[in-house]
Amino acid sequence: MFKVASSGGMPIPLTPEDKVVFGLSFHLDSDRVAIVYNEPANMGDLYGLNLTSGTEERLTAVNKDWYDEVEVSLPEQYSFVADNGVTVEGWLLKPSGFQEGRKYPMVLQIHGGPHVAYGLTFNHEMQLCAGGLRSGWGQT
Image 1 (cartoon, one colour):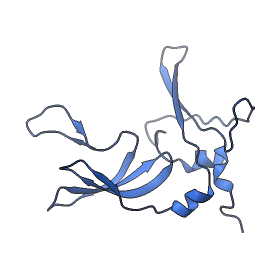
Image 2 (tube, one colour):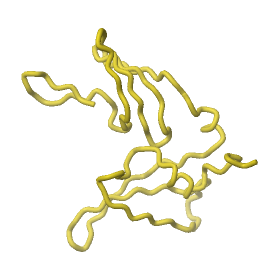
Image 3 (cartoon, rainbow, N blue to C red):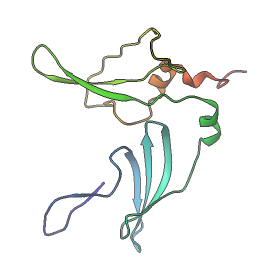
Image 4 (spheres, rainbow, N blue to C red):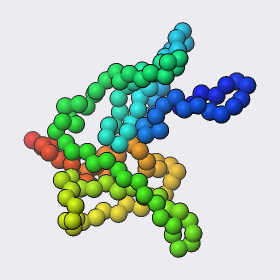
């Protein structure tokens, strides 16, 4: 989310670039915004943002107990130049319990965009492939 003066000028970022805003609501009588963020290690929580001071406050920790039980793999972004000169972006989620020097099977998921493009968000499907979401979760 950005702020731009009505007279023009450069946009000023109001939210961190490592979080994705997927819901917001402005309070008409104040300088506050309620925002729901999604980020690589958190599928979503509510934050309050004071537009005057720029301060942000986390208001919920909805899945805290669940996060204490699982291992979330943080995505590593990389890019390379393909044979045709086009830069291709990729993301790597290392498996749960990853140890440097060991070999692991790999799941390659090729995905176009921009609809549901991958990025700095929590991705359930990829987390399941990385294996960290299974510690007792969903078992009877």
